[in-house]
Image (cartoon, rainbow, N blue to C red):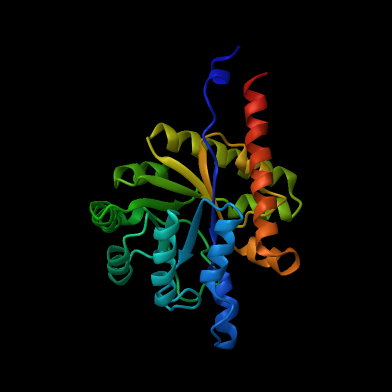
Length: 265
């Protein structure tokens, strides 16, 4: 039996991002639909954590949402992952609420969604300071980055606990029908996950993942968590949020089992 077969696979967690429930709410300036209710539904469906991005312009998640989500997650014993820009304002909010985890991401006012990974190489001193302050407050710090060796080395250098690999290029290649491009992008993710793990970083992944792309990503053995939001909120319109999450969870398990079977051949 190969050595890999004797090693238990890393459990794969699902973090559900509920930002776009707030996007729908804010489109009409109403009090509904409530992100808090979405978080409760996600937890009921088996989510391992709740993710929310408090943007500087407050285009979806609000400060009040973070307060409510923080209380809910603490009561339920579920991690709250606060996505945040590397700014003094966001750092202050992170230190106020002390979520279980904080994921530092790039942010531009004019972007529709996060367009790429954080440039850790180009801002190591500033990012290292934010990482240190959050870790001193008991917050586990993740950096959202591209599958780049230089960025991963910089993540380890600034003291991050976790890297979240940007899966957008892979997902776009799959949806665009480019099999060669998809194969190339998946290989980059595999290599990055291996390198990050060797550097002592826990590996997460997210951005653009849907039912058609989740299995190959879930099969990467070093990945411990997927953070998925926009697709699940969109699918919930047709099937309901709990049904959408349960199906995603099932496909994640299928992907992880695929790796387990391969390891035992």
